[in-house]
Length: 569
Image (cartoon, rainbow, N blue to C red):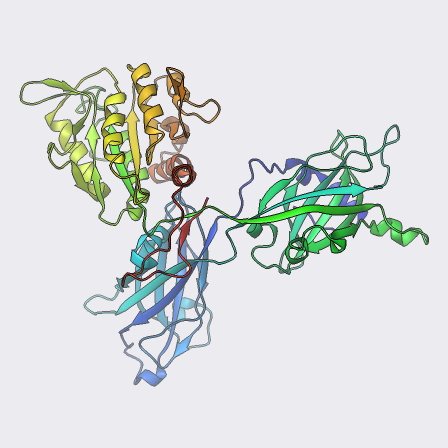
């Protein structure tokens, strides 16, 4: 990123423009505002009365893959009550694909020191941002702990997505009589948009395509989230630089102009014809007027299609393949070491711990595939890990892990690797709930090559019309080239002339995420971040394809929350 200071500064900073890729850059994540209050706090031993009581809550965030907590922020200090209701909020970026661990510490402030350790500790609680969002009405109450033998009181959280963050603007611009910059031609103009920051700096937020050899370019319409353009502040300055493209990256500065979202929203009018000014030229030439003009041809705003997690339960269906080796042998990928988790368990835990925050009942139907079952050794490509065909549900991810380890002791691992039976099993459940109230995430963990690719592709094509996604994690050293065919990022999966309605498969080889130092926590965090990153878009693509529109989330009392908390797209 760079700032508009001088002509030389622009020249030296052009590498940042070249590095900016609007197709692969990410808009800042959905911002969640967390409000905190407490009740029945324990009065510290040094406080002779409530009138001497002053409370503050400190939020710490744990880094991904580490155990290090860093302070994120503090509420204001509220005096003279054991039931404080804080006005200052915590505004957090929400990433669905990450487990965002939070720690809230409560203190009684009894000195002017900013060092929190100088104050009296009253209690703490741990949770994830997903847990707060996934609670009924996005409200969660927790008991404070941390002082042995004492009841520390309660802490209450409410979460809300910040308003004015879900609009998308589509605009088109053209220019007229821009300065000629090329010796043998005219100019190759493009625009770079920046939003202003509170400290007076600017952050790049969009770059148009280059129009070759013209002083009167007409750029293609482009779409940009309003929060990327102005972060919801309609009067925030938006600066636009006009450049002449050069192959070597040393693009020539033509000029600049400023506007705002509010001005742009007026659409095509005399107010949206902007003079392009070059400060350097203006300072040197008395008769300088401008370096051309830029005109807004059209401007349209639409609401971003989002969907409330309050009324969509995300149901994870873990499915480890059990075809590989004797789990009692260290060479097996299922080896049950007393010292560390195997890669199957790591994958289950990494994904399950995040998904379970969005499933209120925490019940996961878990299946295995590729084994001979007792008592007669019947080969099965889909069987409940807990051994209960009537009720395959396991309680939370810990219950899934327990059932997985128990199955290793009771079944005989056996190939081949057939995916279609498991996909069809989950699809049968998904086809019964197509109203948007549930969304299924099938997690398949395998170390083998798919033996039924034709049937699997047909199963994926059929499932693409249902409320479900499929995550495939490949473990071990095998080659997984065939798996890439199912991950339809480049070419949509097809079967017998039918193409999948949506891209619902995400495949990753676990070996790409294993930390070289042996840090399992970091390995799991990396895996979860990548495999879950596409789930929100896949969920919303299903809702959109079926015409299921967002509905207000319901509070605990059954009344609509305003505004509803929504998953980001």
